[in-house]
Amino acid sequence: MHDVIKDLEARREQARLGGGHDRIDRQHKNGKLTARERIALLLDEGSFEETDMFVEHRSYDFGMDEKRIPGDGVVTGHGTVNGRLVYVFSKDFTVFGGSLSKAQSEKIVKVQKMASQNGAPVLGIFDAGGARIQEGVDSLAGYADIFMQNVLSSGVVPQISMIMGPCAGGDVYSPALTDFIFMVKDTSYMYVTGPDVVKTVTNEVVTHETLGGASVHAAKSGVVDGAFENDIEALVQMRRLIDFLPGSNRDTPPVRPTFDIVEREDYSLDSLIPENPNMPYDMKELIEKTVDEGDFFEISPSFGGNIVCGFGRMEGSTVGVVANQPMTLAGVLDIDASRKAARFVRFCDCFNIPIVTFVDVPGFMPGTKQEYGGLIKHGAKLLFAYAEATVPKVTVITRKAYGGAYDVMSSKHLRGDVNYAWPTAEIAVMGAKGAVEIIFRKDIGDADKIAEHTKSYEDNFANPYIAAKKGYIDDIVLPHATRRRISKALRTLKNKDVQNPWKKHDNIPL
Ligand code: HXC
Image (tube, rainbow, N blue to C red; front, side):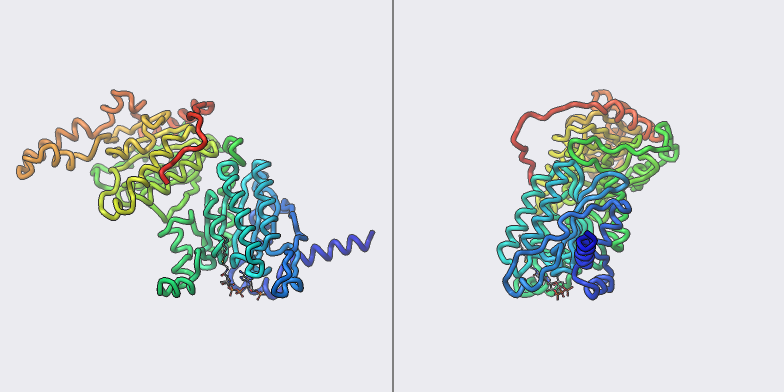
């Protein structure tokens, strides 16, 4: 008996070493943690239960029969984050560069399936060189098996990807199918084809970073939802994000005890809106002063900054917050903002997370760049996402709600449940200047007349009362009472039950 126990321990020890001490040292020298160190930081101490530690590849070509390493380049299993179940797979770059074999894909699919079946989020950590070249089509088959399970799990359990090293070729599409992707600055990169192929095909000279680093994907392409300074910060933030998320679409959002009282009123909000309607103010101040303890996890902070999306809590329960940001492009809706917010709204709706929307939007962005880029279709994504969402929806218009953007931003007409406006709200087809220049075109040369028309337009339209008189706004609320009013509204919506008509699935304008 003693010998078999020693044998098991020796086998485990060997598996834990992955590609060996030299490659682990190289990993550390490159500023990266190992697959196991990452899992240890992500999960509660001692909670990790590893599966398939002894799985090996089944390849014989190119001398691979001589090289078998238990675990085969990925560490898989489950554990807890603050006591809640999470499934995880973590690519081990020290073993064949983390490349994907058929056996490795089977390990990953196993945790994906267990996560869906048991209603828990699945988090994938990527640090790998793509398809296991020695395995040929078997590796491609393995990728497709993972993609298939990503798609089946979409909307069933939250899927999160963390890019912590190379992520190229076949490796990029599994993250792309998940709900959120995050990267680590400087040590990770993500692209379909690398710099050498790019040079051959397009003659562009690029580095890993300029082609697919965090600076590209978190700020330009919008492929990833955030970038962190290093592995440790990234994993700590993943724990924070997981705390906001339900385990599955069968769960309600988790509730965390809070000391922040619902009745808290913040009088500084009464002066948040500047006197001059063209002056910006920071919408994040309103968000942070509204949610419990100011704790707000922002999604994609460096992309589409004219709209702010993220998770907070009200009375301890998670809410998704969507808010126009007057500090960036006056909070206008453009292609990037529409895509970003549409995806976020859909995530919230999949996972029963109520949506709180703060509106200060001058309209959609004009111009050929936007029109040629398909603003019509991208703007429609956000409209569609809000319209189809059946989770509780509470909206507060703080200042401008102009034109089509008024409709889009969770208006009453798209089944907003409780729609409030501050007394500073201006709900109209457009701003006074634009309106007067159209309806009084003949007076354009006469400054006095234009001023008179503008004043008359502002007096009549630049307020929330016309919409309130028609019932499009449920009430005008004082800024300092915003938290209390939203909390009360959400309380009444706890048992909301609205169904969309039966369909196989909808056809959102992709
Ligand atoms: C097998 C691989 C590998 C791969 C790396 N290794 N990539 N083994 N298949 N795809 C091995 C190396 O042989 C090496 O083994 C170890 O991993 C570390 O690799 P290095 O090259 O020494 O590391 P580094 O200098 O840090 O460079 C990392 C890298 C580079 C940039 C990722 O390894 C690389 O370019 N790899 C190939 C990337 C690629 O073209 N993949 C295929 C994509 S096509 P030893 O034993 O020396 O430690 C694809 C199609 C799938 O994925 C499509 C499905 C939809």
